[in-house]
Image (cartoon, rainbow, N blue to C red; front, side, top):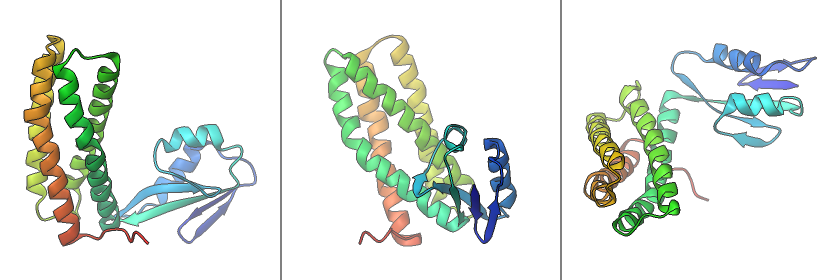
Length: 200
């Protein structure tokens, strides 16, 4: 297998273990650089890297590691968060209606997806607030992250009580405005301090 990290080309005569490859990637990251993703025989892999390697390492012939500067990484984080919110907001709106009626198993499934999305968004906001390349309005993101966590705590209590009207109200009046504000802030930040990908 060939491992390519920037200018380094490492040839493995025998298949390495997944954790050995991960360790090699981590060792090659210098200050101010982030691991973005890797390309395994032409296939881009953006998450669950270790699990992917553990199950596919035997077949991989060439593994190319994509490393980005902190600024490029932050740009990607902001774009991903904005794209997530653009997809999520219409679903969140329909979820408020679904909880006003009798919630079905499909409603609860979508609710679980919302919770997973919020966890991911929270992780992204942590990155935005702690990075050396954080945007100038990072305090706004920090405040919105705190607001989202407090709404999440209220939501947890409403779920415990199985109060679907209260769940609907918290989503509509608490979470939805935060999502909409975050989407606006991400968009303005990208346009003023970062770059949008070329869509051509």
